[in-house]
Picture 1 (cartoon, rainbow, N blue to C red):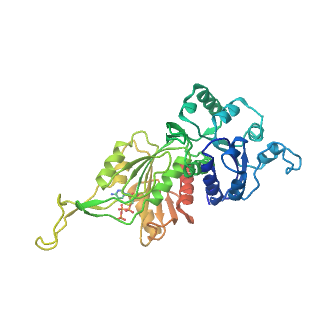
Picture 2 (cartoon, rainbow, N blue to C red):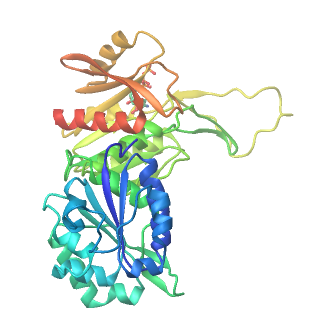
Length: 395
Ligand code: CTP
């Protein structure tokens, strides 16, 4: 669970988007967080404390004068063992309060009284005109300058019927951002290029050669690199996966297209990670029209080797730090060592067991100049974060 052991204060301020805070609470709890809800008076007009208590499993705080806290200082006590404060939705008025250090209700006082190292994240939600108002924009710039992380807002249809910037981010996006905020920024400012997924080599317009790669490991790595503060470009073969937030995705089909996309985006990259299961061969005599069964006998497919993308990159004079992957069905230790040398990469990552395609967990063996180490079986996202830490350490 991505937020196991984390204590999060979820602050709600006035706005229709309070209904999304209910969903966010569920998502945070599901991810392992202990959620303490604090609501402004305005927020209680949009959603009840009863709902928020039921979803968070804890009594909600709404009032500065709350006798449930022994010393009657909820604005101090609540934040002292918290790992983050998240304000979602954050109204225009609350942005004003944060920008000016207002302390005229529990939630605003709690924010001002928080220890300075305690991360504060806000998800603005308001009408487009309110968002664009220069006063709001001044407040946003001020809170950002004060180290408060502003998540969103998004553009789109609004509850008031108008359209534009000001929608609160969806709960699943907020969850990803909150999880990301807890990850160490090991790759801050670095540029990372990855390949992921299978490739598809056409036989005719409706058939082709591909493999069982789901793209999960590559996408998890792209997300982990982004969480670690990197600018991430992901060149993806056909994979039915959502693009991790903040990642630039380029969709390709064939190995040749993947190669071309990689070469076009290689300049200025610090790291290249080749995760894709690239088809080794392509069909030379692919047909422009669908092949018919009644033609004379079975078609004879003529194959030729695809370009090796990783080898092309490692052969360059000015190359980024390169990481290769290996899928072997046996003798991983021996083949891994050999492949690392053959591929000329400082780090090669072997999948332990070949039945990893499509699964949510994995077990990895890392090969470098000093030998090999194992990353024990875990979820692919967790492994991806460990692998990003290993790469950052070696950079
Ligand atoms: N790779 C690549 N381009 C290819 C083939 C492989 O960039 N045309 C990369 C993969 O993304 C992976 C590494 O090379 O990082 C090793 O891929 P793998 O299929 O295990 O090895 P191959 O080089 O194809 O060797 P073999 O199939 O013979 O084991």
